Image (cartoon, rainbow over all chains, first blue to last red; front, side):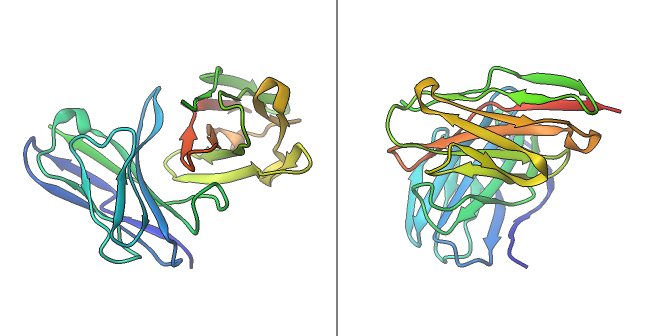
Length: 114
Length: 112
């Protein structure tokens, strides 16, 4: 089944403790992206990747890192999480950029930083 | 800069009522337009999309949207909503930046 898999679904952590949210897609998609969803703000893009070893900042990249060593994986790293990073995170992928293909989303990761 | 506005933040309807959710975008060139739906506790799913051609596009579950270039709008419609349509709806646009911009979402609640 074609899908985008994120783990974990729920995560509670403390300020400053490094964490990684994994994202994997099995559709051989070139484009992958991370979004955070906050009430009243919709989805805001954190980072995206056009292909392996190519990553770029989105609208809200501060406090986050990503890597794209393999085509299928695009982990999101929070080196020193802070409470303002408490949010719902979605990973997404598509076969191309430029709007040619719609995004496929993962099931989300609800992160709470205390 | 490109932007997307969804002016209805929260819409409450009874079953069988008609629905129209507004979406306006700010980019004047060629755009690709999308509506995504997020059911409670789930991820976003594509509802419908417009790339070119007939400005009235039909999506899944009886939804449709009309692209009106002169009004920079892409409103979502459904003639008769059901309780199962309760969800959050996001309009999104891609312009010349190849970047998908989402609106802030409209929460729809349908009561039986």
